[in-house]
Length: 207
Image 1 (cartoon, rainbow, N blue to C red):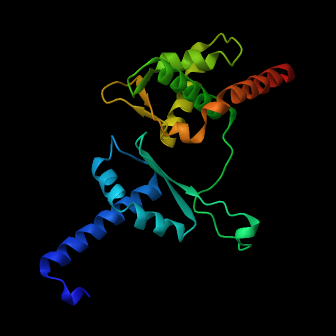
Image 2: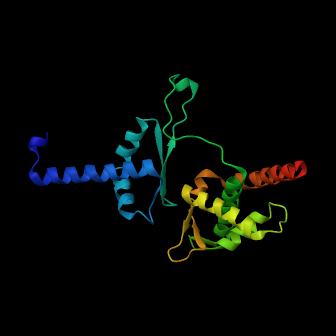
Image 3: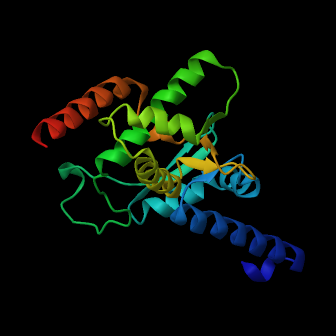
C-alpha cells in the first residue's frame, strides 16, 4: 500500500506514526497533562482509539479525563472469568508508607475544599501550609527543623509521583495536580483521614 502513496503522503504517515509513538512512550514514563504537554495531548486525542488498543494488547488500560485534562496508564485487572494466564505486570503495585499516604490524602482533601469554594481550576499550596497540615498528625516535637526536613522528603517523593509540581521560580509553592482525584475519590477522603488518625494514635500509644 505504501507504493501507492505519494511522497508527501508517506511523509505525513511517517510523521503521524512518530507522533503516536511519542505519546505512547510518554505514557509509559508517566501521565500526560493537557496544560503541560499541549502537543502530546493533541496527538493523544487524535489517535486515542489506536493508542488505547495498543496498550490493551500488553495488559494496560488508558485512562483519559478530558474534563480534568490528564491521561495515564493503569494495569488491567483481569477477573478469573477473563482468563487464568498470569500476565506479567508492567506497572508495579506497592503500598505507600504512612507519611506519603497522609500527604496524598491531605492534598486530596484540600483540592476538594478548593473545588467547592473557588472557581479557579488550579490549586496552589505553599510549603508552610503542608508543614502545618501534616504536623497535626504527629506529636509535638522540640526540633521543628528536623521534622520539616522529614516533611520535605515526603513532599519530594509525592512530587516525583507527579501529584505536586513546583512552580517555576517559586521554590516553596506547588500546584496540586488534579490527577490525584483518580487515585483518591472524594467519597474516601473522610474514611482515609479517620484510618490515618487511628493508625497514628495506635503507634503513639505503643511508643
